[in-house]
Length: 226
Image 1 (spheres, rainbow, N blue to C red):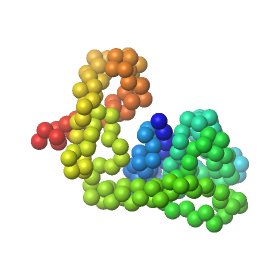
Image 2: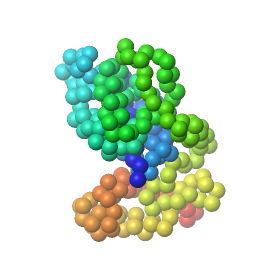
Image 3: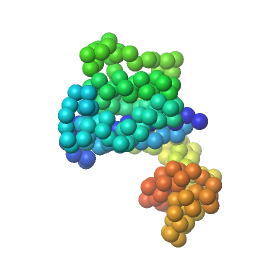
Image 4: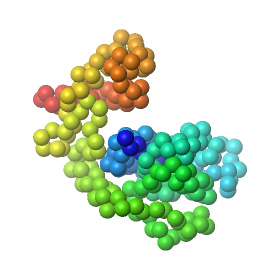
């Protein structure tokens, strides 16, 4: 099963900026198109520089524990793809080459929502972003995601317990939706994430994703019944 790391970051502004909202919509959407499972690294407003070029007591990119952990997971092959809006949203200095090398070691493909010119110079190094045979499919996915967002439709693979309606526009309760409701019931009963996972035989990460989207699931159930 393939797994994508959706990398979200913005250098300036605040957490509610349109730029971040766009990334939080487009990056996971593309990640869902290229991989079976998605993990999101949402750094919000965070510097894109590292200790390779800066000395900042507020905390640089390579000093962030979550970044360090995800880069190590890239290196060990945890992910099949690293997805970002563009390379500058990943990193703005030579630490990008560290991230890129980790992805290469773990056989992870780096893909972007936006276009990146391979002939430009970045961080005083010529870009060496590999493009494999899936490039055409990825570009088609980008266009499809943008089109569906413009129309107000759902996009990406259905969330756990969901399927698409007959028109293929919106996610509605599917075969495993009863399990979704059971997760909510167990959570309401005070069960831990691990206890719920053991009861319904689903990974803890999936349990957390379902609980984080409780309101969304309830709204979709009501939409399907109306």
